Image 1 (spheres, rainbow, N blue to C red):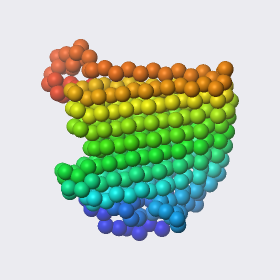
Image 2 (cartoon, rainbow, N blue to C red):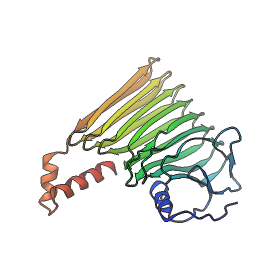
Image 3 (cartoon, one colour):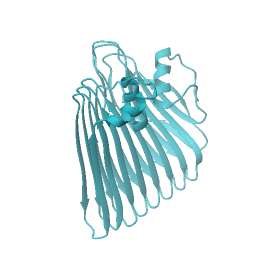
Image 4 (cartoon, rainbow, N blue to C red):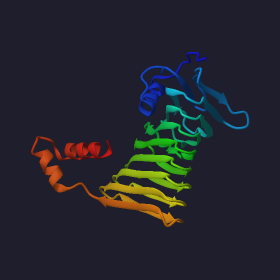
Length: 311
């Protein structure tokens, strides 16, 4: 059972940013801070077990579990701390659950801090999962804030998953790798939101394989690259059966930013319906002028447009 621990004010602020938590949540949760366990709670339907062979947890969700959630935020506030964590989620048949992950790094020192999280999802027949992952960086030190998430999704017949992946502030370097395999009638929806600034770099790679008839995937990324930051979006949908797949990249480029969009399709069946889209451009002048006529400065108008674009 959960035992109260002393988290600093800054650690609590980061938890709020990455998990939208302003208090200890109702339901299952696992808090991780500076490489150690900071709190845990399980329920009758959701069990969380510490791995014995490596750093991380196994989350077991019983078949038929409805309207329950799991929160697993990670906080790093120690400069120079680097860790790799492995979390596995076993979602039983006919579940309907929400899983909220996220990592925030507050680095006020001179050494790089890094969290590499490897999340694997095993989703059984007919289950529904909403997965929310937020990344956030803060701190005035010279050390970098580095986040490298790996996500693997294995979906059984007629299961569905909605993934909300966002990184809006403060992460110096990220390499995001996502792979998914979908069986008959399974459905995957991904919505990525990303903003980089300064000298930040971000690589997003998706490989989604539609294995069986009726599987579908919709992978969409919206991003903004400011200052001299660099982004790469590399998404491939692979159709091995009668299926439907779509990938899209929609980006705003500003200042001296760089964006590379590489949407791709791979069909291995005559009835695989796959398509992709990509668009990169600057903020339209007429949008700025319209908002400025309402009393906003140019900077305020830019921020309003970006906020709406990434909403």
